[in-house]
Image (cartoon, rainbow over all chains, first blue to last red; front, top):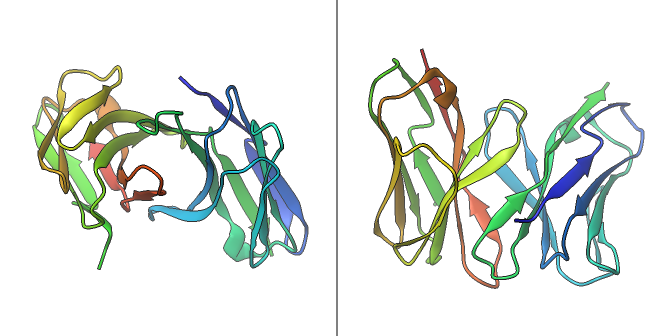
Length: 111
Length: 111
């Protein structure tokens, strides 16, 4: 099976600060997904990366997949309280029949 | 229209009871999943069905039995509920080549 390790496990930042969450895979990634979960809500899809070196941005969130396709980072610029939640990376197996999630990163943004 | 809908959203029940969680997707996806989210927010896959056929059955007590009457539905039945079954259960669906869509989760509390 595939293991996805996220770091840090939890993060507390002051509003306005930048932050980065990392996701490292034990195997080559065949797609990497970033999700956000808020308490009491389902998972919200943020971005998907497939190609080595790919980078995508949406509002103040940027996700990158390294050239070797084994590590991804999620960067938030000028964090806001609305960014608080749990961020999960996820990846399908090479067959696409299984899906694995990272260990999760809990983000708290202090106003 | 909700793409992946789970019912109920919250379920509080006593130990020893039998309960079911329903999941329906209207995306035309051919694969559906059940995940359990533990207290550390780590999501663990339990079952996966592709075109009504069971393809993933991770180490899960046999008190948990998935049922897929058709491609659009994957229900989870749990017998003899135990305290340790308390968790949030997520249903998801996918189609090869596209992303994964999750339900909003069912918070099960066993008392």
